[in-house]
Length: 173
Image (cartoon, rainbow, N blue to C red):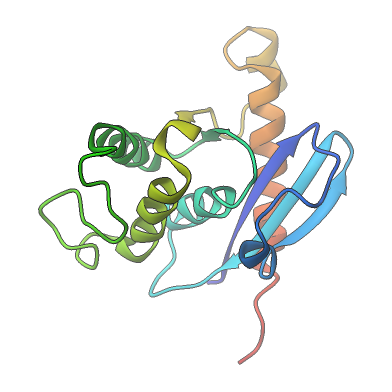
């Protein structure tokens, strides 16, 4: 199966919000209420965790501090751990490609993307990014009952739509 990743930037008006290298492989479109971005997810295998992580990596190219809502707890937990580790290493050996744990980047699942994530937070600074868990597929009733914030429901829904479009963006070859 083919996979895609998507991100939603609420209130964003400009399509010039990404660094040039990232912008080359990302599709961007202004939707009502913000900017949607998507791309196909490539690699050795596909899972929901890989697609969510690819979206986080995509967001690292944005020219702004980030608070990313993710509906995959495993990705939130690992990303938070790496951000905390990077923050503690700042000024004392936070290096690109330097693995902050015992396993080499190639050994864990999706290690290729976790390496890109690590290098991204090392380059932009770990204090410029925060990740948090949001409820996926939240209903209007959950919002009405105060269980989910409307911003989280909208953001996750829009990112999921963008990811679906990203899955159709694969090229033959």
